[in-house]
Image (spheres, rainbow, N blue to C red):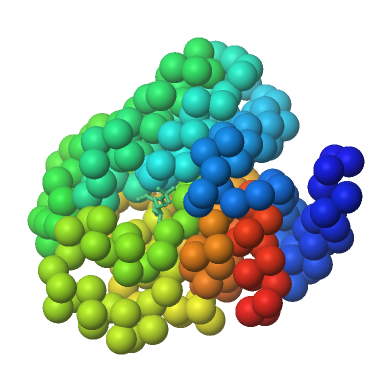
Length: 255
Ligand code: F6P
């Protein structure tokens, strides 16, 4: 806290939470893009927020995939055996270690709790997805748990980077970017104003059903993610943002 005050970060936290319309903004000193220690600190700050909110029995935590979420899982230092961890959305085309299912299992293991997974293949049509969900009681149960999660914790990425990471073809990536998509979260690609340009078809949470979730925590740092963070907070539903100094300063200059 002393170091934060010294860097003027507590004032910046208040300024950003007011301007972005969030309950709380937590800023970690430094740049998580260039310093892995800062990434670990982001993870630790998020784990502390989880500890604060996981204060009742039988709570449900929904978690996204991504590398920063792996840091969050790793930083968990408390147990809460009655917790169930679920992926926020199924199958978004990430590498296994970055998939929400994997992170959910890792987090549950740290918490000494349980996890449920969602297995849906990549890139299937809405129609096929509907058939799969309707005929699979496991997916239905987990989907229902996800929609009523007590805590959602998720990452935010640059639209272009995420589209490429998920193997979209060049033409589609260009179309997305030309339409103004700058940020991505939960499979939603949005403009800096928070307009949805494209949503991947999958089971689980959408940005517009976050009102039913207890508390929504986004974790993302690095200067290059500033616009993406603004885009996703403008899209709505966010409560707490955990970020780093380098993203926070860049956000300050664009809002
Ligand atoms: O794919 C899951 C996800 O949470 C995305 O929604 C988000 O854009 C991305 O991961 C963030 O990834 P990272 O933490 O690796 O930057």
